[in-house]
Amino acid sequence: MTEVKKSRPRGRPPVPDTEKRVRNFTFRSRGDMHDRLARSAADNQRSISEEIERRLDASWQFEERLIELQMTWAARLDDVRAIADNYRAAADEARRHFEEVTAKESEKIAELEKQVESVERSASLVDVMLGSNEASRDLIRSVAIELMSNPDWDGSIAGRKAMADRIHDLIYQPDVLKIIRERGDK
Image (cartoon, rainbow, N blue to C red):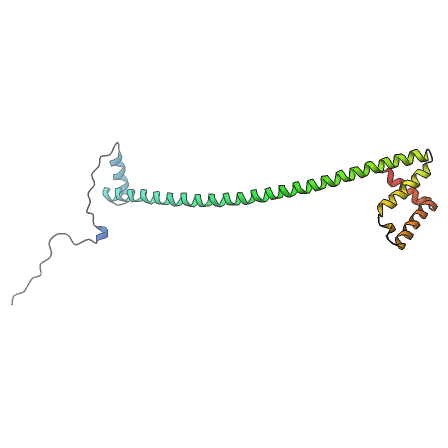
């Protein structure tokens, strides 16, 4: 019987397409580039070609990561700008509100200043009319303060009665007048 021998295929075993090296690059380098590549290849247990390929691939990965980082930072910067715009808008609204309130309060203060001027003129008139009678001046001022403090006193019979009682107390209870005088001194 004759044995049929299987023949082995010639050449190297086939390599998957992803691992095939079909392109050859030739380039010149400066300085000690070859020595550095050789040391790095030996340290990483690769050939110089594999080391060059790995370093080129790493440089592209670095560029991709750098682009991703730039896009992330641009998005974050947009977020920060939006937050700053919101704070700026809130601050502008608060400033407008403050200015409105300030204007209204300034109007109230101006009105109160007019009233104070009117009261001061009236007080001066009372001083002129009553002369040096301090008790009369204090009594008239106290009655004026009571009337001013209760502008609706004449709206009802009960309000009129209450006002009359207060004025009566000012006249017949000197302690009340003394307290009013002390308040005026402060």
